[in-house]
Image 1 (cartoon, helix red, strand yellow):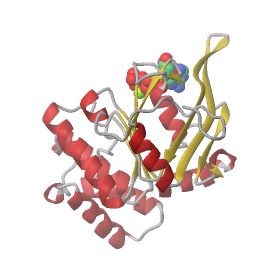
Image 2 (cartoon, helix red, strand yellow):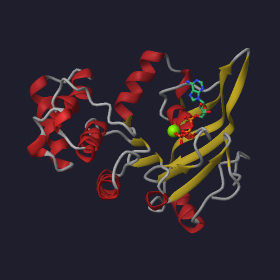
Image 3 (cartoon, rainbow, N blue to C red):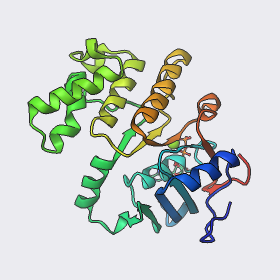
Image 4 (cartoon, helix red, strand yellow):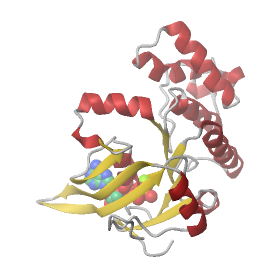
Length: 250
Ligand SMILES: Nc1ncnc2c1ncn2[C@@H]1O[C@H](COP(=O)(O)OP(=O)(O)OP(=O)(O)O)[C@@H](O)[C@H]1O
Ligand SMILES: [Mg+2]
């Protein structure tokens, strides 16, 4: 699909909803002509080949595609965890990669939340302490951080597990703590890379529903990658990536 600026913003599904979305909501995140290569032997292996995408505030976008297509690489660049070789990412029209590493880290920690396939909780800290971490890093005092983290843990249904350590929690519970941690600083965009990839179908469904409930409650914008067709079907837009480019059909 080509937008008014002549950029290919990917093939889209659910045109009616997309038109509705584009008219009513501003663009929160815009990526233009993103390229990324990794070195391979003496040369470079191109992974992302000039991808563009526009995401409107409050939308839920799912990126699907076969293993190795470049989905995680793109998600990391959209979330400023990695820099592209060329191309731009704008947040509310601001060019993010003009920022220094420190500015970018501060921006990312306050505006973006991340949930990955593996929870990445710190083993030596309790669930509550893990959720407090982003608040403590931002300079919040322990008492207030603890209160805020508890509210976030309560929201994902784990108040009674807040003093458990990661090795005392199930896979589904660990992912719920990871979601509580991702949302504790009230980001505008939630990124998720195969957040249900490690879970059985029952826990996967709990996590899927939690994502969409939280998205609605908080007016979040959500960008996720999944191999689960049922999960993908719940998003307002699905884009398929093939070999570092948008596929023509989903
Ligand atoms: N740091 C790196 N150095 C070298 N090559 C990399 C690096 N990260 C990713 N790649 C390569 O880039 C390609 C795309 O990787 P990416 O992780 O984005 O794929 P993906 O679509 O997320 O796949 P999956 O569905 O398996 O998670 C792969 O061929 C991978 O081997
Ligand atoms: Mg991946």
